[in-house]
Length: 392
Image 1 (cartoon, helix red, strand yellow):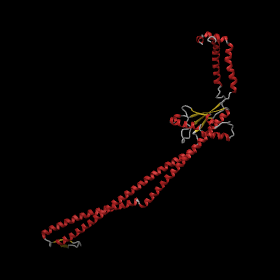
Image 2 (tube, one colour):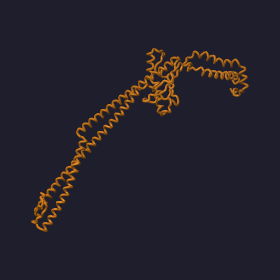
Image 3 (tube, rainbow, N blue to C red):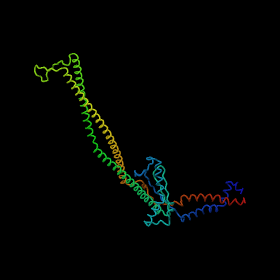
């Protein structure tokens, strides 16, 4: 064997020339065998199709540009569709459809069926490449197209169910919020029957006007009291100076020409004291009336403030309920509109067509490999045979 380690290129060439027949046999026999066996080898054909996936339920649209949406979110949707396209549920639906159409699928179970399906995400896009392998090219394409059609139907049904459930939930919330809104309207109506803010306002304004008039009358009475007190003081001074019997004359209230009316200081003091007492009694009465009016204004103000607070809270609640049920109404209208739109979350970019060449064994891949291996064997096997006897 050590001799083989020292073979030169000349030795190898000489050995190949000496064993030309063996070189030809070693090179051509494997090729001939391959060409004879290849036509009878069991062949597997792989059909290919492309589908595009949308980003969300509400858009119901297909996106081929991932740059138009969040890449991480797009990847999640792609992974979701990839898993569902090879799911057990979908494969069962496809098998049932094929059996219902009396299509010959051979002796295959659902687990073997799942293994024949592959899905791959195309980089930087929302496209999926789907493959299905079968021994017949037409059947491979037909089954893959059936898988796509069944998945679109299955997913559309899922989306429709989700949409209808969402419409049902939103409708219930809308009716609930609208019921609360109507209930609050009745509460406000009933509250206004017991409390009329305009009526309370009129009462308050009338009370304020009366209070203002009473305060004006009190000012007049105070002026009169001061005047009468000045008169009493003046009469007291006259009494000290002239005595109680002193008679004072003044023009008659009867206004008789040239006649004068005379009263003693004592009589005038009695009259003045009586008038002063009457004025003070009137002042007290008006002051008491003013207090009552002020108390009434205070009570009316308190009632109006409390009632207005309650009314404001009711209006705030009704605004909140109105805003809420209008938001649900808008959402319900949007969902109803979406329900009328065509389904585009999953779209077929290209259906599968029967492949022309088998996926395995691949002649274009295997034949060059056989050539290379045959050439290597044709070189080294004769050389080994030639010089192995010297190292024996």
